[in-house]
Structure formats: C-alpha cells, structure tokens
Image (cartoon, rainbow, N blue to C red; front, side, top):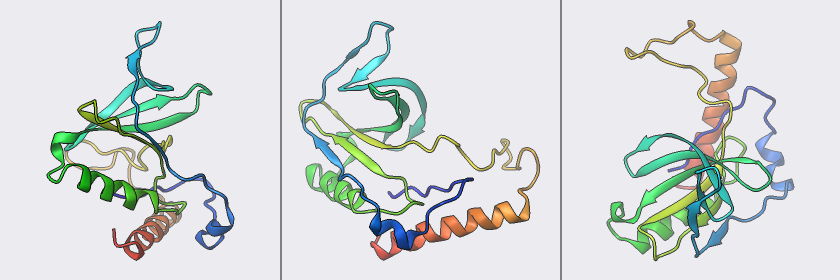
Length: 168
C-alpha cells in the first residue's frame, strides 16, 4: 500500500518533517474525463503523458497538471475491491496519514462513483528505480557502490519503520 521512496539527493531528516507544512490530501468527487487537442487523455486538470505499467489493481501513468508538474496516477478499477467503498475509504485514509520523506505522498483522490475507476494522484519519483535488472534479475551496470547502497538501504529502512509505526 505505502510506497517507499528513496532519493539520490539529500533527504530531510524525518524528525524535522513535522515542522514542514504539507497540504492535506485533496478529495474530489467529480471526474471529468476527455481528450485534449493533441489526443492526450485528460482527467480533470491532468493530462496523461505515458503509461508506466500495470499492477494487479490497475495501471500507473505519468501525468502533468496545468503548471506542467509531474505526478504518478494510479487508476484502480472499483471491481477489484471486495468490500467496495468501505475498503477504498480505509486504504485512502491510511495513505493520507503517511507523512515521511521516504514514503511516496498521496496528493489527490478523484473518486467519482459514476465511473468504474478511481484515480489516485501520487508524488512522482522521477529518478525511477535505483537499479535496472535484466530478465534474470541481474543488475545491469554491475553492483551499486557500497556508500550508495548503504544510503539507499538506510532510506528504505526509515520509510519501512514509518509504515510499521502507522500499522501499514
């Protein structure tokens, strides 16, 4: 549910996170779905730029808003939720309370019951994966440098600790 985010750049200390202001997750109950003049799919103020991949509950795409800020959008089919609205609202409530620099942030939920899908707008981790693997699971380009691997592992552990403290 919670996605871990690591950065190759300097990451703020989680203890200072409470001092930073973060807007609450925006909840929208109207989805206006269309196509722009260039043939790109639009959902409210967002344009779908590219599909990144599929997961068991839907697809993940790169989107941009009117200010050209990039986000990741997870499109989830409602039929995949066994308890329907109860399960959806429980998962969204969990995601909205996760505030940590190493956990991907949920910015907006577009939940229009007239549509079969729900749209979750997340922070986009533009640096992508820390390592690319071939079809056998072997690292392309060789192993990570030790210092970089330690930094990544430390950030992952910090994110996991935060998730566990929030019962995720």
